[in-house]
Length: 253
Image (cartoon, rainbow, N blue to C red; front, top):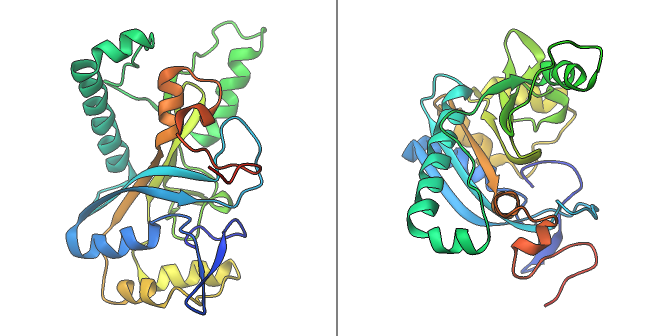
C-alpha cells in the first residue's frame, strides 16, 4: 500500500500476502529515476467505507510523475496544459456528443492557485454578508500547501513552514478531482519522515533502494477519471460515470 492507512484490500498471492493497488505512486517514483517522465492509466482500489455520491472503491486514475522540476508549480502547469489539450480534443472530435449531452466545457486557459490557509478566509468573506467586497472563488482552482498531517509521507514539506506541504488539489466545480505535488527525493529526508510518523519500512525496501542511488527533484499527480467525467457532464452521482461501479454494497456485476 502506497498511501498508508487501513484502506487496502488484502489478498493472497500464491501463498504470499498482497494488496490491491491503492496507487501506482511507488512505481511512478521509481521509474522517474530512469525515464524522467512517466504516465499511467489504470484502476486503483480503496477499501474506504464511504457511501457518498462522489466516492468509488474502484476507479480509474490518470497518473503522471516528472523529474527535474523547479517546484510543484511545474506539476500544476503540466496539468493545466493537459486539461487545455483534453478540452480542445473534446471540442474538436466530440462536438456532436457534447451537444447531445448539453455539456458546457470549462475554460482552462488559466487556473488560479490559492493556498489552503487562505481558502477559509476567502470562503468566509464570500458568505459573510457584512463583507463589502466578497471574493468569488473560481469554479476551477488549485488549492495549494495542504497540511503535512493530511498528506502521505512522501509529500515534500514546505521548507518555510513544515506544517504544510508543497502539494495541491485541483477543485473542479466544487469537487476535488486531482491530488498532486512535489515529492521528497532525498533518501535521508524520506527515512526521517517515515520514522517521525512511526511507520515501518517493511515492504518498501525496493522503493527506498531507488533513493539510495539518487533521485532528481520530482513530483506528479493523479486525476480521478470518473470524477472529472462526472463534473464535465453535470452528473449528481459518480456511479453514473463508470460502467460497473464498485461501492460498499456492490461487488458484481
